[in-house]
Image 1 (cartoon, rainbow, N blue to C red):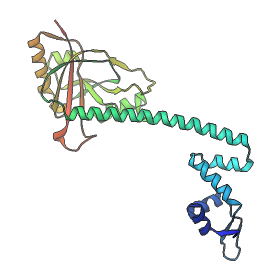
Image 2 (image 1 turned 90 degrees about the horizontal axis):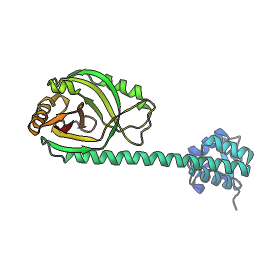
Image 3 (image 1 turned 90 degrees about the vertical axis):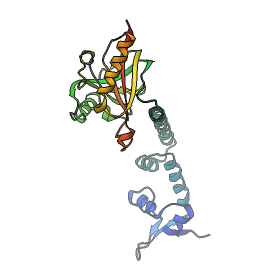
Image 4 (image 1 turned 30 degrees about the vertical axis):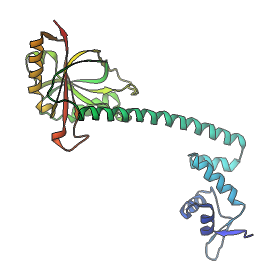
Length: 272
């Protein structure tokens, strides 16, 4: 039986790239049995088959290279057990993280589907559960650049550190709504999902009844729909009891087609 193999032969026999073998040689994880001084050809022995198979197995478990180097330096059972336990804990952490991401994606898909198939320009009365939000009190005049307060909001609540898919919204105070000053916004917020961990204090929009209308367009087109909601409220003898919640459900983050933008306005109310 052949005892020594060129790097090409070793690569084919054990299904591993030549570049990987050269890298393992360079870092001292798997050195050739010997190197021909005349031509610098690397030769591997049959005794190295088992070591490479062990390396491949441990790498398949996603163990980092530096830990493999430590293990093969000492080759102790306790070291391997500790490595595997540590990796098992890391895998469990990643699984939890991926489950959270999956929930967020499913929730976003449901919201997009709801927004795409929603009835537009129609007022409905809805009862919504409480909603937690990162809220920044910020005077904003329609037409101002909203990106700076959004950046402030993200910085204040540490939203840049993690994966957040919550929707950004703006709010008009009840006093401005009653005086029909629809160009002056009083706050900007991001709805926080149950999995999101935020250190800074958040606010909660309580569970209550809302008048809801959805329309094609953005905040720039909202004035007409605020007036429509107030007219409906007056006709029904309802009373406004809080600030508005205004969210663009479909915006530039989803599509470049302005005709597909959908914005939602919610006004909290009670029966008089």
